[in-house]
Length: 332
Ligand code: ADP
Ligand code: NA
Image 1 (spheres, rainbow, N blue to C red):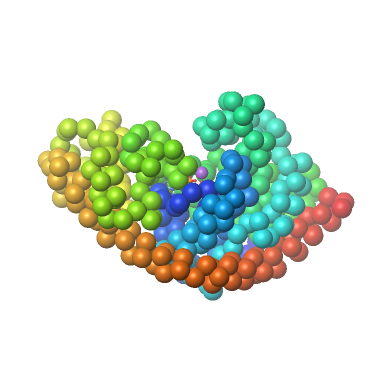
Image 2 (spheres, helix red, strand yellow):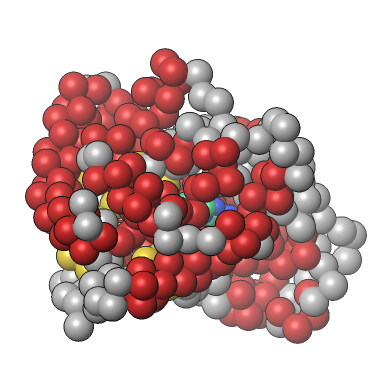
């Protein structure tokens, strides 16, 4: 059996969104106080699977670190670092790529969603992404990973790779990592299209609330969010066929730490003319303080680099021996 340890990551491939906050950062903070070791990584190698402007990538990586800390991740109680500073991720990724099967990668729906059908245009890195993600997790023998619903399939693959490695080499070395998927905000959807998740990589800025958006921008995006003309029902059962309305109610519930049904009890019979301004005020009241703290951190980039460097040292101290043992097991 393995010592409980939590690992998770976010790509610095753009500014972080309200989806990242509600689905990931907020939970990272609460897990920090669970008594279990927490390791949080800015996965900059993953960001490279689609082309990034080099200077922007550097900036976004610091900004993501600022967002983590502004949300309440404490780089003393948690380990906070960026992936490219700990070479065990890339090295273990190769070893695990030789264990994973091509057919498993072929079944990843996110690859298809992100343009994987156009095989002449998409990078090999994007295809192999889940093997690097497996390395991120297994380099720390992480036993649990808090992820949104969108990452569930990739985590399944990590479990399959760990099990195959253990089987192929007749060892009980890698843990079979558990997903931690809970809460109403495991999948915050786009404000423009109720069938897509809110994402920092969506080309439409109106589709998401960025943690750096000011009050006006947030209100405007919520006012313009796609909805329908029907009044709100008294419970979520009444929203089965209304994905956009469901999404806004879910966001409200996650922000106010209520259940969606509790929210609807208050708004039953009301239309979006009433609901949207209330949601906008609530979103601003949650996001604005985070934006303010992010700006404070961003005023001192050298301090962010120092925090990330310290985190990388602590991460390396865990990952390096596990990589060395993995190499030994496979005969290197
Ligand atoms: P993005 O799609 O914004 O680039 P990432 O792939 O970097 O997000 O995901 C980072 C973390 O944020 C993951 O744990 C993921 O599950 C979570 N996450 C991303 N988008 C959402 C969303 N729309 N709703 C809930 N959680 C999300
Ligand atoms: Na993503």
